Length: 413
Image (cartoon, rainbow, N blue to C red):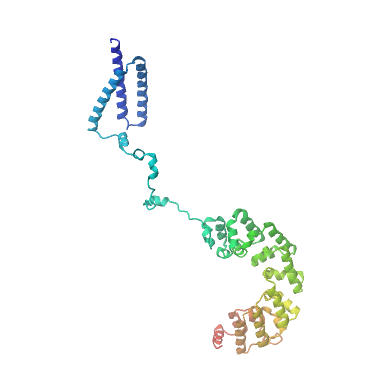
């Protein structure tokens, strides 16, 4: 017993030190983290050393149990007295706060009802929500796909009218599958090399939207063919601009078209080339109206072959003009105005003028006594000026009257 007394006193001092360290940690829990961490570390070192010492010297469990019960009783008395005089600490509040995990077991979490879609959302969260429009599976307009397709966006920026392209579903579907950088950009660069300006690309692609399905090498081959026929770069650019479908024709078809006009009109190579440069849609349009008009000039209107050739070279549109308009114009000019064939051949511009306009001007000149169209007679009226001048110039230079006089006369008709 005498040996046990010093050991118990040392043991009591160690236990007091542990209690002091724990109390220090509790009071300094809300202090600076660095300080609390250092205090805890030093106290743990002391406790661990004393614990090792006690484990080596004391083997009696009874004494330890009695002391633990005694210490817990003192601690409970101190807590009950302290809780009556102080507010609970942060750690104690967290222990008292019920959590979902403590209230419900894991197997019951699946039974919780989902969040309601009608649950109100704050204005700040609503602004942060990004709503993306869904891509329609099918549509009757390309406008529904513009926001999702960079290719369509680029085409719109170039001035392409998608409302005209979407009337052709196959072409519209083709555009949606094309990549601008890989499939379209090279076509645009090719057209610019031909001489088309930036503001001409949009109208061109709106009309010849099928060019995106053409192979680039085939397009280059067709241009090379035109160059071999001595068409200049300026001529080719003009032809492509005025006849967008020209590049969609194969070399064989282009060669057959050129040969047709050269043979039917008996033109040499240079005149044939000049004819199609001035009206390139002769190479892309139907040949049936051309064949029919040639017969009308020869069989119905009575023009000779060389006269038809001369008129067509001056006014290429005569080859594609409406048959009814041609016959009405010729009937009034030849049978009412009494202008012979050889004068009409010299001034074929009259076939580009509307019939009612020819009637109004002729009747006004008859009213003024100036309806003279024979170049062999004095004070004759040039049929070219008669047909092509605007009203102001016609009244001033040909009729020698004012526009008001002309308008008053028209009201009497």
